[in-house]
Amino acid sequence: GPHRAVTDEMLERRPEPARGEPLDHVAREQRRQERMLARPGVLVVGFHVRWWDYLGWADPFGLKISGERQRGYAKQWNLRHVFTPQVVVQGRSYGIGSEDEEVSALLDAQPTVPEITLTREGDGLIAEIPALPLPRTAELWLLALDARAKTKVERGENADKVLRNVNIVRAAMPVVRVVETPVRLMLPTTGLVGRDMAAVLLQLPGPGAILAAGSAPLR
Image (cartoon, rainbow, N blue to C red; front, side, top):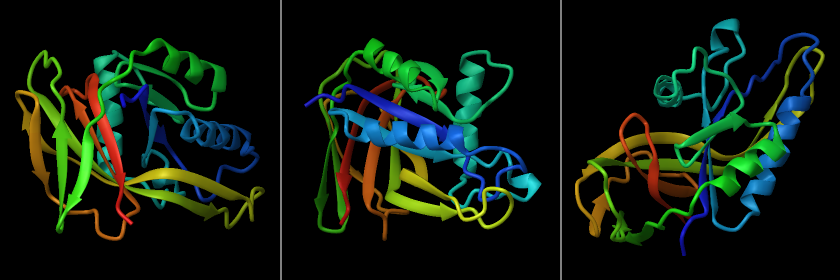
């Protein structure tokens, strides 16, 4: 069936938060992610960024491409600054990721998007994009996800606290330009080995609106 929404999460997980900084906002955002996972038709993907790495609090899941996507969104919306945790819904709207009511309202405001069927075929991955209107050429993004992981805070006032992460993006890349639908595509499996799940986003460049999405377990 159709996906109600795709939440494109811009996260920043610091193994050692700043002295005196509570983990409340992180915990709230994590609980909200768990609730989103249980919500039918919602695909949650967590892009971890590296904004705080220069302070010595490197996010073990931070990716360069995550920051590039967030800067792209900021440019599209004329935002002066990027922030975390940020949630982007359907590539069309954004909010503060730790604010449950705000995120729920964003989800409710967006129409559903068609589902892309992902299936394994030998060592490959097949994406079947249904017929849908394309305002212009779109990009198909392939994401490799880890379903769950924990990060322990090693030092400081929050030592021994555990950060729980879900649907963590470990690799992401646009793999093909899509000019018409329906279409059946063989996707590269680069970056998928050893990961829990694959997801695909059909998205207008920018990054812009997400037009369709799908996911499938890899093991």
